[in-house]
Image 1 (tube, rainbow, N blue to C red):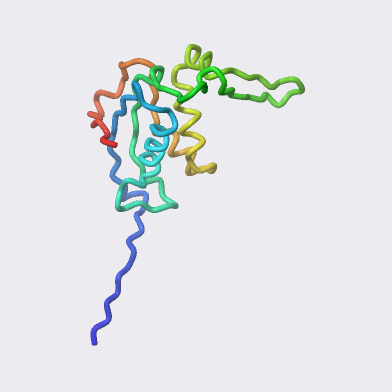
Image 2: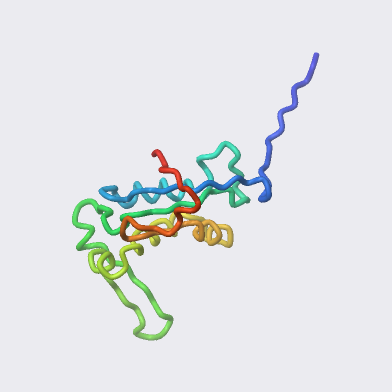
Length: 147
């Protein structure tokens, strides 16, 4: 009787093949869009996914200022920041944040869906968010990502 031995292949950092994807955020719901982007940044869409290796792809998000929030979240959702000093807590609503920094909604949402360690910070560096339709990554020949 012959024994079968199947070994799980663990991807090394040097073996990772990175692609560039472009995502149009116009009319998309923020949370649903960002969870898909976080999956691509982590590399979970690939069969060679390894949890302890950054095997994700680069993602360019355009039209981030036209992302949708369901319900009354555009007026009610509040983002807090704290400087560390007494009385240093600031708050801003989602509507004001979109007008001030159109990329911040998508960036904050995706950052919250990535691991909170050195690996997650490395994954976040592969995200490029732009408020309009123009981006500066044409030389990388990004492909549109099909959800």
